[in-house]
Image (cartoon, rainbow, N blue to C red; front, side, top):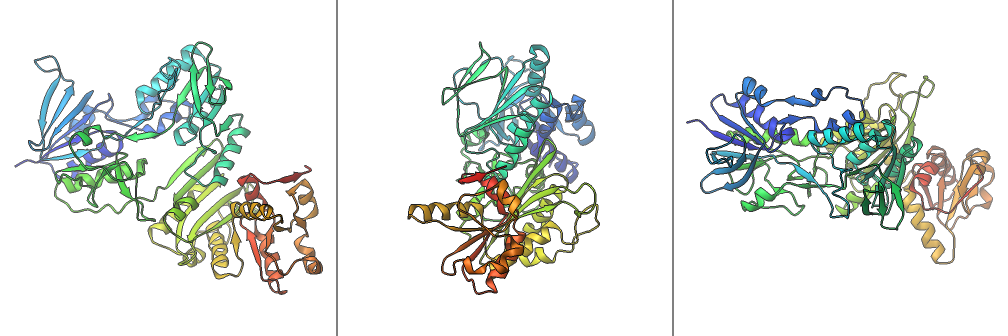
Length: 565
């Protein structure tokens, strides 16, 4: 007897599930139901068509209903919405094309196994003017077409992007590339809030360098379409010929909730390790599901294309009788910021603390290849680890070439449960045009090991800021030793910091306190490490190195600084 497999939703999870199902069974009756006009398209590529990086719209259309039929023997119903699941009768009510005799386009389709891959929907807040003709969202090909058509016909001179996440920043770049005066408005204190604060600062600085205005910590109050402006919560107004709302995405759960399927604590559809919902004949994949974070072990929503594709493959396999387990996701992501790259994997410091780990962090600034080879560009690489076990918990990076390479290495290390010792010993490829003999990944491992062993203890810039605030509240002052050279110090330094260049430190020991904690920093961390070892071997016991040095301090922000340059 032929298995009737119905898949609701196309794009990443659903289309992958349909193709995988046919590779497993030539006999299965496979039907894919898609509400939109396109069954499989590159939704991650939409901003890059709007920026002009992708010249041909057709490149985004990965498969057609006819293509699915001819290659896979899959029946595809586009423009068709699933509006009800009758779990007892094992059937789904559809509304849409093709038309039925009653003219309503409504009918039922039976299933033996059902896969839900409905993804999510952009959040569209009920803000005055949000329904104006110059306000858009970006989620589908028709959304993209509307934005492109508006720019071509209306020729707006200014753009406002509300939301500083992945899509928002990609679209800010696209608008700027097309010559629009562009502003990003983010309610949170920083853009790219899925990364730690210093990386949000680096990304913001890059966008501002490229002419994008970035406003954080204030929300959108209204859109004034007539005057082509937006109004912020603080009363200020900004020119806005075109507005993109990119505030967030909610999982598409109406159908699943109406069918009585269990919803997880994180707000996604609950599935087990086989991607089976609370109904044993219904599976689910993609942005709508709740999965396990591989590092913390906690349930989470990780709406990314890579996990969605892999989930679709596994859901189809299990719907047709296999037993493939889905162990969860790391949340590995990469993002282009004009001529820079930001990437991350695993847990941030904040998430690691919330998960109960004793968190350590090491921030490295190092050239992406040998510094003596032409074209070397500095990258920032941060690792987060458990101080008790030395286990790697996460990593983030920002810079030019090679950023995604390091994050992919560290994602593999997370998958394998590696420790700082493993990172220090990784045998990575080396040639001057590509890396250094000690890759930034190795170096991060060295620094983390020095921290957990007590050889060279670390603190983050945020921890230094907290220590300074605490000391000030008690009427005192944290002792900060800046070991950069005199010129660097004069260009800018923390208020009250004592400057003794590392090469002079051995001759200036008598003026340093032996009974209070000394916070050491240099530009990026290495010279402060050398200084700490000098002091330790001269009897100073209370020492800590600010990881990432003055670069991290500037990226963290919120310090009282003295600047002369």
